[in-house]
Structure formats: structure tokens, C-alpha cells
Amino acid sequence: MSRGWWIALILVACGVGLAVLVGVLGTRNEPTKSEAVSSLCESLKTLDDSVTALTGIDTSTATMSQFQADVGAIQDDWDQVKSDAQDVKSAQMGSLDSAWNSFESAVKGIPSDATVQDASNSVKQAADQLQSTAQSTASSMSCSSAGSS
Image (cartoon, rainbow, N blue to C red; front, side, top):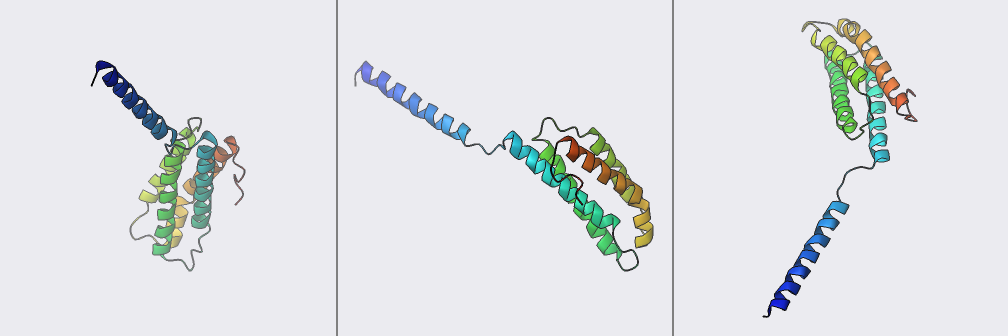
């Protein structure tokens, strides 16, 4: 093969490689800004709903297992909020982080022998604050479903 053929072959290979790279970069699964905000709004709404379920628990009939399941749902929802917030650069999470830390401390402070009534009373104020802050965060992001529960 002549030198010209080698140069042509190298240029074609580089062109194919560049086309593949552009194709891969163009199909990444990063959400658009509006998709990211929408996901965060949905996760904030789900968190709000879960806190409502916990604070509305019927302490006269509920078991500690039910209470703990509601707390577990809130933990899962919080994890999703944190994950979704990473994709929204404008999300102001400081107040919500603080409200979460207070809620988590209140849950950890529940004595192991507490009744559902005692446990509910122990976390009520922190849960209300978490819910209020989640609603405020959603509202500041213009989420359409903010505080609709």
C-alpha cells in the first residue's frame, strides 16, 4: 500500500471514531433541566405525602411496625429527594437538609419501649417542620403540586 492509502485509511478511521463518540455523547441519559426539576418536584410531593401518612397515623389502632414502616417510607423518599436534587443545580436544599436532620434526630431519640402514641408525639414537631420545608422548597421551584395534600 502506498503512503496515500495509509493516510486515507487513518483519516477514515478517525472520522468513524469521531462519529461514534458524538453518537455516544448524544445519547447519554442525563435529564434535561425541566425533567430534573419535574423529578425533584415529584419526589418532594411523595415525601410530603409520606409525612402526612406518618403524622396522620391512628395511634389508637396502629402498631409500632406500621409506625416504623411509615418512617422507613419517609427515609426512602428522602433518599430520592437527595438524588433528584443533585440534578437540579438551582435547588436550595439547606433548609430542607436541616429539617431532615431534625426529623432524623427525633426518630433516633424514640425509646425502644415507646408506644405508637409516644413515638408519634416525639416526632410530630420535626415531621411537621420537614413537611413544611419540603412544601416551601417545592413552592420555590414552582412545582405545581406543592403542598396539595
